[in-house]
Length: 189
Length: 189
DNA sequence: GACACAGTGTTGGATATTCAACAAACAGTA
DNA sequence: TACTGTTTGTTGAATATCCAACACTGTGTC
Image (cartoon, rainbow over all chains, first blue to last red; front, side, top):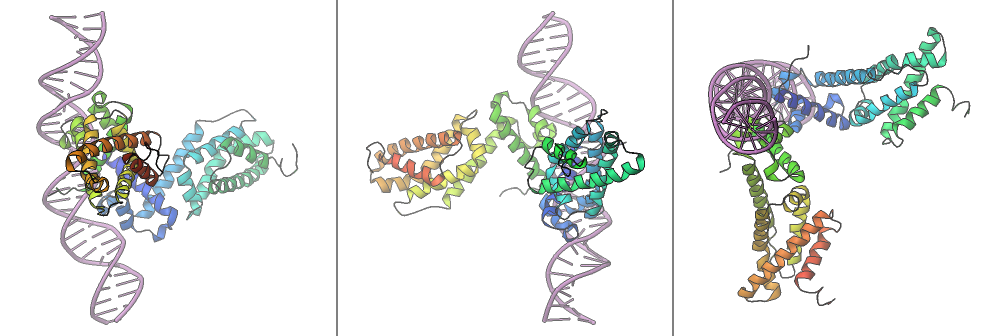
């Protein structure tokens, strides 16, 4: 399945990804040149082309990888009980925090709108079943509800990232849960 | 003169040096194996042997390099005026601070006694002339004085390193100067 | 002593990266 | 338009690194 990588390939790809994220923090993808990327990564330009088509290709692969990692990370915590949807959200937030730099750049700085949608889709896929149980809605309504809730949650997480993650993940997850159940709107305790 | 290094050689040597310093922070040089060094640096062991005889050789080269760098660094600030010996000391301390990790390791953790002596010799070479001027002593006495002063200063700097450099370099340099002139001992202001 | 076990230093062939050079595309400008 | 400078994508040959295998040494243990 996955081609086996010796140390050199691993290092080359790792440093190129890392460097592109750093550049994306300051500039948009279209204003970045392959030349400057390679110079900053201290990798020969011709080496770059043996791995990627161009820097857009590299960005795509970074996003793919992140999406897959997040997906398989969430799969490991498939809580079945009711009540556990908060913990699921917390796991999601923890993962985002562990990769704060990359999420913050891809979601806030020079954001790729398509990436935000992919994240939403993945999160929805893993959280929907739980939300359905918790909220006892039929599947038609439930779809709208999860869309509404997840996109709201994503934006809360984006804001939290930009503000240097002042709250711990558990607290943020609890907050999002209360937002999703309308607890804050109706002022229920 | 200096052999030209392509990116690969540069990277290999850099990461090996960095990793050895990290290991030395925890273990003595004799208890470190080439195998573990290479595993932590993610460099093939056979590659190590194309650059260095063994890990003692690597340590020697790290020390050589540091000594040469320090030496040429100090050469750039050859203050001629009296009074300027404090600034010379400050430059020394600033250099140590910029390389705190490596100096702290080599001087405090698993110290190599020979290295401490080399540092002393280099510092003496650059500071002695100034001290002579300042203290108006003849050359025989001056030699003893500088030996006494420099070794005292080195140990003050070691202690300062271990205590996370609470004072700024300028203040430490001033303190060392006062120590060297006996100002603190005689309680002069 | 015999044995297992871990680290050493070396080798040869496979592979990845480097470097320098090239033609081509492009943008800005005199 | 022609000129200038920059980036692009590609190539071939040189070089460095990787990897797996090897024989060897030392160390501890039964």
